[in-house]
Image (cartoon, rainbow, N blue to C red):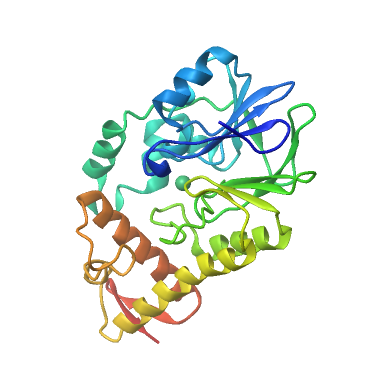
Length: 291
Ligand SMILES: [Zn+2]
């Protein structure tokens, strides 16, 4: 664990925080709190005996709530819009939208494969709420798009923003399920830029202090690049499936598992939804074409 401020520690996840892990924070204050819990076994064993009072989850995703169930006495906090997706497995599957594109069995395999346990959520918060840990106070910055209730958390006195899955990865923003919204994601990235934090903690890229503004801009740019490629591909009117096999989102050179191909379809569908909303694309019997 790496001390970042007087009371905030960075809990580094194994395997470079690749799925199903994420970097997390420990707030060592009057209330001892974890922010997200998918930090791997070694951290879990170290943290279990230390008395955790509360868990603040950035959003409902499996790779953020994974170890919540190991802390049954902790009070769990989450944004109102994501709490239902974490409380029960059927709601989790529904938030992903696995029933679309015939993904029911893929969804079941997904949650079985990572041994996902639902988590109770005892306290719900909203944008602008201040979470008071004692001397550490963090402001809730509602940053939807990745999920409806995704939140970042800002500590004003240190200029630290825990941006969670606005993760500044080179892959770019992830919006490959039913409850994502690309327009909201763009707004949320820009909101992080407006806050102009000194430090960003990314759930999958760790502590970032250099060129934060440039990196946020480059991160948003990935969305526009992929969208341009989809528009180019729509020179031939296409279905979601026909676009998905071109692997514009996950990269044409990669071999995709059944799950990743399902995510590819969902991500393409999100782009198409946005293009229809912005009157650039229309649809006729499932085939999309440029207007
Ligand atoms: Zn996520």
